[in-house]
Image 1 (cartoon, rainbow, N blue to C red):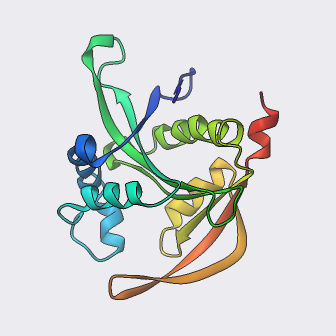
Image 2: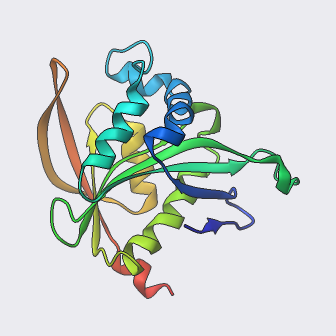
Length: 188
């Protein structure tokens, strides 16, 4: 995938993840987002969660997990990169021309710096043009107003649809949001 850079957005890249090479880095992102896990009444991310998620993604048709990475030192090309977030999505689901965005997560120390927005600005045009997706859908937990506001700021709109899904022993209501990827095709 490409890299996005402009005067207002941070420079990030998206890196396809796999369990063998990236489980430890993804687990570190999960550990750096305690607020997310606390919404599910967990003190922190469960041990081994990243490896389980990456293995589940690899065995689910159309599902991908992309690490959001940034250069450790923006002025030193040899400094290397660090993973600061993740995007989890599944193409052709729940409909043939739709992509389901399961998560855009940025580690808490890097939130509110435009990193999630920059990642979406990379992914959305690729989904529209290369993957030929027509729309994106996301399901947001009703108790996660920050995610709801974030996706609205990206251009997602509430559909009025919701469902209840089981998460462990609890039931969670998801509010569905859609994004028309046609705008990404017309912007080139």
